[in-house]
View 1: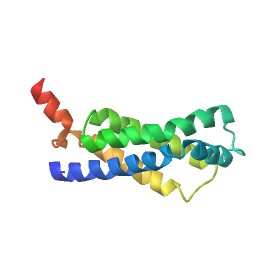
View 2: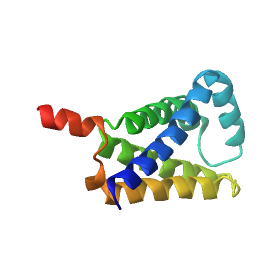
View 3: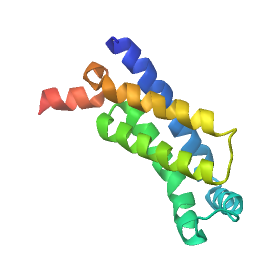
View 4: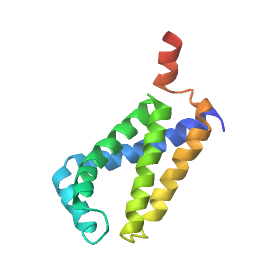
Length: 132
C-alpha cells in the first residue's frame, strides 16, 4: 500500500463515520428512541442501550473528524474498530442481518488501515510530529 491509497481509505472511512455521526447529532433524542425500540426485545437492558445510543453519534462524529484531518489516527482507528465490534454484537442480538455486512466492511477498513498505519503520511499527526 502507498501513502495515497492509505489516504483515500482513511478519508473514505472517516467520511462515513463523520456522516453517520453528523446526521444523528441533530436528532439525538429521536435516534436514541429508535435504538431503544430496536433493542426492547433483546437481552440488553435499557440501562445500557440508552447511554450507548446517545454516545454512538458523538463517537462516530469524533472518530470521523479525527480520521479526516489525520489527528490521533491510530487511536481513532482503534476506537472506530471498537465501535464496529460493539455494533456487530448488538446487531446480532437483534438479528438485524441486513446491517451486518456494512459493519463488517467498516471493521475491515479499520483493520487494514491499522495494519498499514506506517503509510499515514498525509496527516496532522505527521506535521505535529515533525514540529515536536
